[in-house]
Image 1 (cartoon, helix red, strand yellow):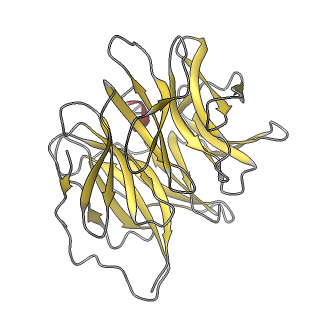
Image 2 (tube, rainbow, N blue to C red):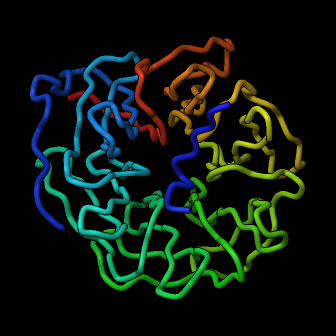
Length: 299
């Protein structure tokens, strides 16, 4: 059984060429865009973006090394990502209009899983310093600067995710039992840490649903399932259970975009939560994963 969790792969400024200049924005149309990572053009992971109907696919990074864990800015103009293009993993942003890449943070030994805050001003990520075995959660201004450490756990705190209102940071941690991850929460200053789930054995990072009432995450052993955890009642609803992971949602909460290892390779799939219909967005022999979703307004 092949399981894809790109969020766990981690445990220079410049410009990227426009690899597909014909994939321009369609005037007058609102478009749901999915960013994802893929090995389709070589051994290293690069970032791609595609419409939710499979059209207008673009490769948006092409550096040496890998580019991982895309996160959209609120306006869909930039993508934050982790990359080892400088020799070790740091946090970068890509301006999709100019293809300029800006370094945000390279001060730690390694950094991964960036996620931009709902107001666009901050980026939360997991990182560790030299001599440290596990990860902690950090936050840095989207424009760059010194990163601020929010957690200090004996093992691993990783996979941060913002609530839609920006008032809560969710993350996973094995602070209670080594190797067994559960979802925790805190405020953006690193205060009021609290456990959210128990006995869930969470895989990868969580994500908050757009209405703020629930979080979703992957869990399971032989075959992973994506579940929705209702915060008020702690009710657990299985959304898909066919070896799927890395959930992301459309801004209206009606579509679940996720990675799936149900075929011989890992692909991106989309589940309509209203009709229950599922479709494949990417279908190739490469490893595709870490989907992130935004809505681009047509002009």
